[in-house]
Amino acid sequence: MRIGQSIDIHQLVAGRKLILGGVEIPYTLGLKGHSDADVLLHAIIESIIGAMGLGDIGKHFPDTDPAYKGISSMVLLEKTYQMMCEHHYHIGNVDAIIMCEQPKMAPHIMQMRENIAMALHCDVSQINVKATRGEKMGFVGRGEGIVSQAVCLLEED
Image (cartoon, rainbow, N blue to C red; front, side, top):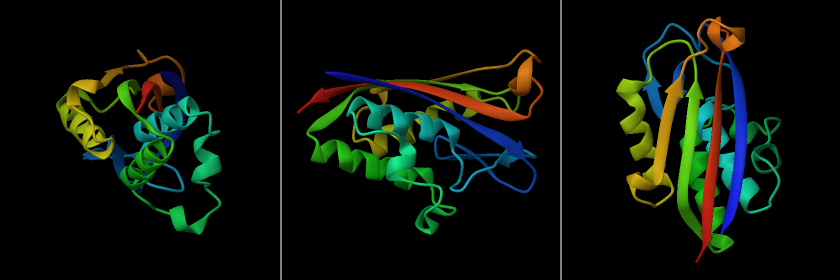
């Protein structure tokens, strides 16, 4: 068994879609980034890469590579699943948290879990996503950005 953890942070800006866990969430702001800036999936991807001891997300999907400009992070998660297969691992479980003041995440969490489980070829019960607010403190509380943290357990095939 191998454990990986990660944190990802993106700024909220006008003129971008808000996509978290592969779900487009209606909101006036979106996340700034080279790809779709899905902060939740980025944290999960990097936790998996870390559990395998293969560096970080930037090593495998650099934001300087035009091939990843605007790419769906669901595609990156699927590529990460292929890396897992090549290294003979499968998901034990993933536990992730989204930290944002607005909008409310609860209505979207089940779809996020389903999307992640589908991409990682595991049961939805192996994927947990939860959310919390910044309680008006710091950049999260002021609505300036969103943070996500993830921990994963990989099991050897």
